[in-house]
Image 1 (cartoon, rainbow, N blue to C red):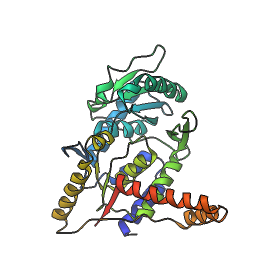
Image 2: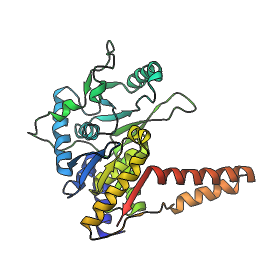
Image 3: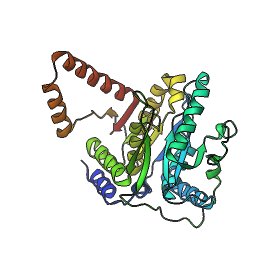
Image 4: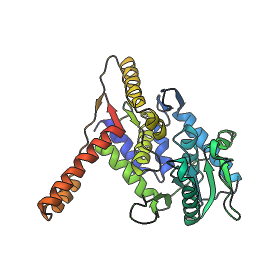
Length: 321
């Protein structure tokens, strides 16, 4: 691991909360980018990202959001979504990212599931992408619903430092709901920071890396990958999942765009995919599992391992010079 990468890991370990760790990349010269299917981009510098989150946190406090309150976010991947997520942490509240409906035909079932999740976590506020602000029905005695774009208009004055403590509740992650009704899993700041530092140690990430993916942010892999990149101050380029599904070729266009930009900045440096590595603990656990499995289970496990590797390579890339 490089000296700069090791310094980021140390900063993450020393941070008392997730937003404090994210501020480690505030002086990065790179920009945080979100693109559409035609690779048209919207971007912000890291200082703009953090100032916007601090201003948004002030607005949340003015609306009565207190430390520990649950705030649900319902949005596609966007700069407003990232701003709302960090602002929630900055205010000391607990973000809960909710999944979007997959098909319009599933809207009634989606609304019922949405009500269950909002009630389940005891949300004090629901922030949604601007297109949903008028479409979602308001529930009697339910939390208020506001557009994420409202935080964008918050004045950048009297900005306060983020609040949080290592053992405080940081995030509620919903399970997939494949085998039972989806439930919220509580993660402390210390646990999220441990995931960020582990990812940093495995990837050896530095500020010179380029991080790209099209994973949804309600998925833990997409969220941790994004937060880790912000903590490093890396150049980030995100493609919303629905934009990828509408035009899968946009992924290759985005790859070429970032590759060519990286060459221009670093004098012909080529980009390569950093190989995925397993730590000793993962290898030992897998060996114990396979040692007790019969041949049929062993073949299934190997097949699943290969499938996961392929899916991860297709969905997310951590690029290194």
